[in-house]
Length: 231
Image 1 (cartoon, rainbow, N blue to C red):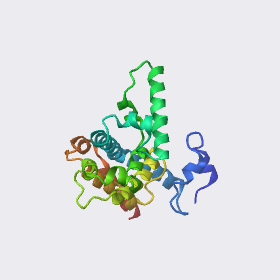
Image 2 (image 1 turned 90 degrees about the vertical axis):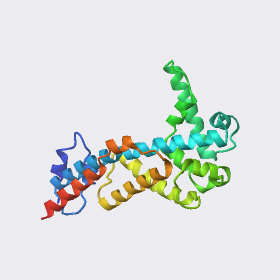
Image 3 (image 1 turned 90 degrees about the horizontal axis):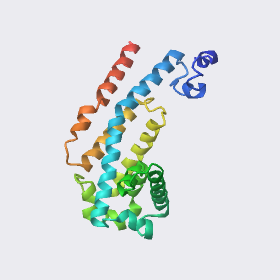
Image 4 (image 1 turned 135 degrees about the horizontal axis):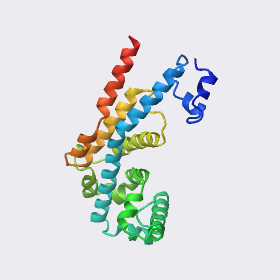
């Protein structure tokens, strides 16, 4: 049981409400809460390379295919005519396009479409990977297999959409410093989902990710530490 005065010791850096959310059972002590918080930071750090790699590769893959099979200037065309995107994605694109242009003017930098692409967030790209874009994008085999080059079955964006939705929610929790390790098996499952998506997306060997990834080592270490503490 955690006492209020124990939480107050951490008020200058962490809110009592936030820290107390890392009590995973009614029997957790303040030491357990602090340990859970530290473990959460470690596992969040460890999965960061996978999340970043997926975001960058998905973004670039979709952009490249739209340039190849829709229009080399698909973003400029969309800004002017709005024939591809639904209202919500168009609104996002238009805002990012204008914000990027304003930022370049303020910083006296050259405005490029590449900067717009980089500023479009993970949510924008995953929102393109849903069935409402089947007729405009994904029912075209060259588009689907141009992005998901190693997808093993008959092309279907529905499976992709479900996995990306789960990953995006998880990614947002990581980036907002929320707890992701209360149920370790769920964290491991999302990690495997990320690897699966990466395996569909690229034929490259992902050497940089392999060299920087520490997730499995961190995960196994934390699980072993938890097991040892129970004995």
